[in-house]
Length: 209
Image (cartoon, rainbow, N blue to C red; front, side, top):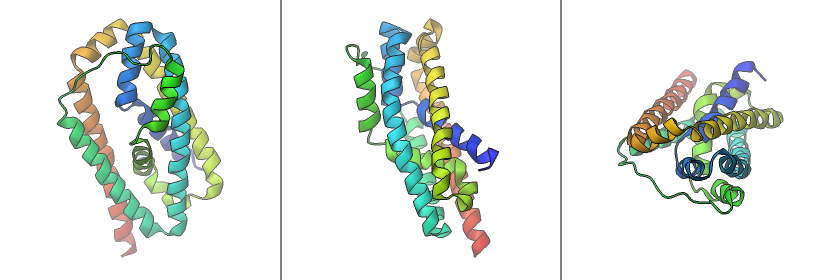
């Protein structure tokens, strides 16, 4: 496996965890109320879901690749459009917050958040596809363990960043005060990755035409 593919997979895993969503907001709210220790328990539980959905995402990506490059390109287009759609939704979001949840059992709450998020699978497939599309033709089932290891490193790095940030009082204040701006900034990032996925898929299909 190339260094580039390993790096991009780790980056995709980190971005998957870092993107704001229900779990992101729950972590910051919980850490604001109970400190970093509660945040650590929450993300430790959520890691179970990250690994589960990441494994399914890689199975889908590699499986589609084994069936032929055209199907992978179509998947890349679908994922690119999905990321763009999420980005547009984030850009038009009104923002908002919520009361801390999971205060009694942060570990269990994290597991439930990780396993029951209905967007986890399509988002993980979209993120990994967008960032690893240029390596699609070289993927095989034998690469799956190393890909998952790279994603796991990304998960851990992102969790450390989130817990550290969530425990900073200035960051909590900025997050609560400018939540709408942060959400829209992430929306721009989603659109950028979606556009990359569409570009890679279109270029690959054109090269075989």
